[in-house]
Image 1 (cartoon, rainbow, N blue to C red):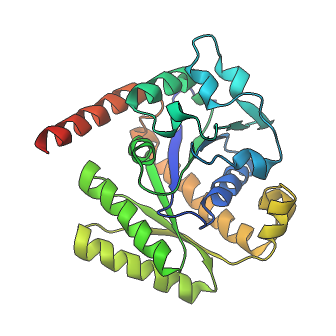
Image 2 (cartoon, one colour):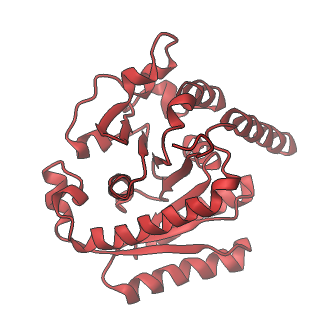
Length: 282
């Protein structure tokens, strides 16, 4: 592998739970790997981690262990397949539920060397706008916000974007409309969010893709198997593949400007400085 290759770090977010965010993160990781892109999937839903359940595995160690000086990344990182890794989270651990920049620095400093071999680093963040979600989103190069046609999903998705825009001056967001009845409903849902963001936040959001409702997905979840592995020709997988191809293209375009993970500590310091300035203003 070219030593200059760097990881494209992607945060998968949502304003509310139940929109299919975790399944999207999981299957995108599998599809990108199938497209010859080494990928690391990290469960960052530190309150209600469940990627391990969807994968049907019981990790012996998790992110919490990386806070211990004697624990190596190799002891925690689970190789699902060659070129596809998984880093599990811990549910309900107080130290991680509201982790700050210091904890991020400790964890990502340990991860730094391991991340060099991956083309993509996918962070499956928790739903909502707590400090952990916001902090992790700010250090990601690409922010993917998952919404559904439900009014509450639109409202909460907008609230999430608003916080990142007003508190961290983030302007670039990619949107996935999940569980749409058809393309028409998906486009209509996106347009409503797009208009709100343009009129009230002064930013233009980007539609990354529309994923239709797929009755095969619940069966894949019950079988604790990623949909991509359970039924590769399913409707949702076809649309996820289109999204994965776009992500590969984005990475190719962004390669000269990718700073993660190599300057991750610098980004964390900048984020901490930004937060301190905001608190001073208040």
